[in-house]
Amino acid sequence: MPQTRPLGAQISHMLKDRGVDVIFGIPGVHNQEMYRGIEEAGITHVLARHEQGAGFMADGYARASGKPGVAYVITGPGLCNIMTPMGQAYSDSVPMLVISSCLDEVAATRGQLHQMKDQRAAAETVCDWSEEARSAEATYALIDRALIEFGAKRTRPKHIQVPIAQLEAQAEAVTRWRPDPDPDHKGKFVVTRLPGAITSGAPMDMVDLLALRLLQAERPLFVFGGGAGRASHSGGPIPSVLAMSKAATFTSYAGRGVVPVDWELSFGAALARPDSAAIFEASDCVVFVGTDLAEVDLWRASAGQRPGATHVNIDPEVLAAAHPADFCLQYDAADVLTKLRAAFEKHAPNMKKPKSGWSAEIITGYRDRWRAEIDAEWPGIILVCDALRDCVPEGTMIYSDMTQLAYTAKEVWDMDRPGHWHHPYGFGTLGYATPAAIGGAVARKGKPTMAMIGDYGFHYTMAELGVAVELGLPLPIVLWDNTKLGEIEDSMVRAQIAPNAVIAHNPDFCKLAEAFGAKSAAPQTLDEMQAAVQEAFNADGPTLIYITPDIIG
View: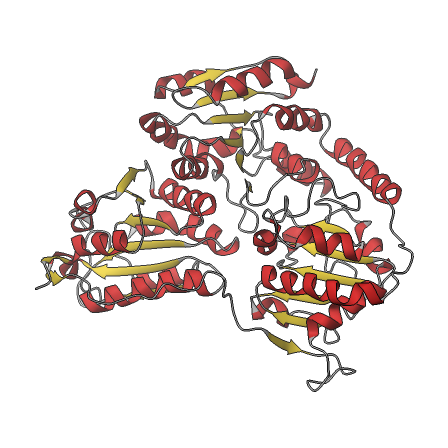
């Protein structure tokens, strides 16, 4: 006979059975029943200092591990505090499951502890869906629904709330069998829209047609987003596809590392450079793979391509925004690129590829000019980025924040593998890097992880440094202190607004870190910074590495 426990305890046992090993959160009187089963189930719990930190840790853990990041929070303020990380996870397609308690009744009784008018609806504004489970069976069904959807569609955060009385009530263990989702299946292979010249009865399928278009093009161009990451693993199709098509490439910021670093026709992550639009207009076959082309990718209305581009994406909402004459494939990027490689192998021997309109000299000329532009926008910071890139160990996973150091690095720091630079791209939350890097380090025991954050962003979540100390994480936290909200000040000046409210009093960050029990360093030269970073990766706890613009000299 199934064992009976309070439902709060059964939830942890179910999650463990479904492969969850770590939960981030903070206990309270309203969700304490969820903590009854954590240790018994064999799950590690990481105690955050604030629910916002717990959410960012779950986000960082999910990005590093590929598994859902799970967080437990209380009713009311606990749920509200984690809504910012939920919004970030929604923006960046991160699998996060937030499970909270909720009050049993809110309509007839007012003034209850942690009471909100509509907690479920509030959470729904920043996640894929938010549901209330009013029975044990409903709780189990919703957890399975969330976990299955993480593996079968675009990954975005989910929220489940369970009434306190239900958490306390006895419940039998879950008896539902959850079939493992096929990790390679991301949606049906369907053509969602065809240009007028092509009909659904065309004799050749769309991948064959795309292969022929690329082989006939003089200036083919691929744009890879984070959704193409799975196609760039060792033996993946991207190197072969590029070699056979002789295509130039851009990546989104999230797609950095997808294109091999030695591909000589790579424009890098420079979509936001204004004159990249001319490159798109000159291209005769443009293919967007696994990218949303969001405002934060382009900072203009469109990339600049002519009608007739091809879009490969699992999200129909992205495809719906394409030009009516574009080709749209709703399918996983890795599978389309694998099929495209096979189509090239079939057609290439029978075709003569036109002389390429691209050359390494053309690409190098653009990249050199863009590097000079970036150096003019953020003077000297490139030198810091170059020095950091040259000193971090191979395979380092980096979490960055909303800071000029990261803005520069995202454009000039080529990654040698995908999924190893995480940034709060769309929602743009300050304070992301420190707790997210803690979550990443928890997921990557024994592997190098680093945070990069600005002085103001560090204020948002500095308390989570205590978590890294408790866990003994060898985590370098590179803190860039320009003594102000530098990017906001620059924006105000460009808008002819007298800079206002952009300077805050900072503490002695090194003493602050040491008060938490962390190590600290304040290097005065780039060489000293490199030595401090390398030492931090081998420390027995986190190290705050404090640098200012003076380090540039």
